Length: 250
Image 1 (tube, rainbow, N blue to C red):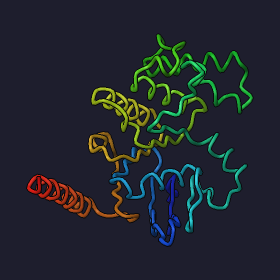
Image 2 (cartoon, helix red, strand yellow):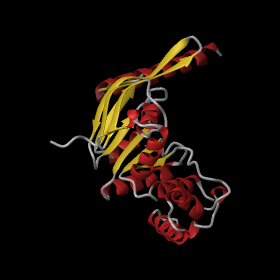
Image 3 (spheres, one colour):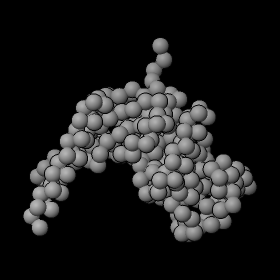
């Protein structure tokens, strides 16, 4: 029996805020298989972004184990983590994280500067990736000249430059309108169907339509879908009640 692509055991991430300890993740156990499209759902403060950043080696856990391809991220130093990320992962962020002084082609090519890829090869590969995400006609436009959806597609192309087997996306539709959000969801689904493993953290329920697997987080814990729906419904009802009370008090 083969090991899962991602194995998480007893993962915790605690933050000190004044005299209070915030338990962003509090003993998470997860297995995620290769070639799946996993969506991690959770409201703000549930721990989903903390989970993604730990998986991506962008932050350190308080305790617990993270293995990807049977390699322990929690035991790697910063240099080893950087090399592992470069050869294994592609990142997509809610805020795009494009370099404002560079055009789309240059933004996509930028990560290849750190792999020793020749300039001509960088340019050719970047053109092909922009064509793949439907932006071949925007290659010389800077981020300020692109819509939010176009910027996110540039970010997707950039995430693919080193041919990663694992795509990690943090609220990739969070800053997009409905049509652009659906286009990015479809693009992520296409990447999954091409053989990549995709993991998305989001509070956007539309994303679950594309998922092969769903994980639900509340207050740093993995919960069942029924528990998640019940808790989120309670939150909605509380907000409605507060709104009604405010209306009455006017």
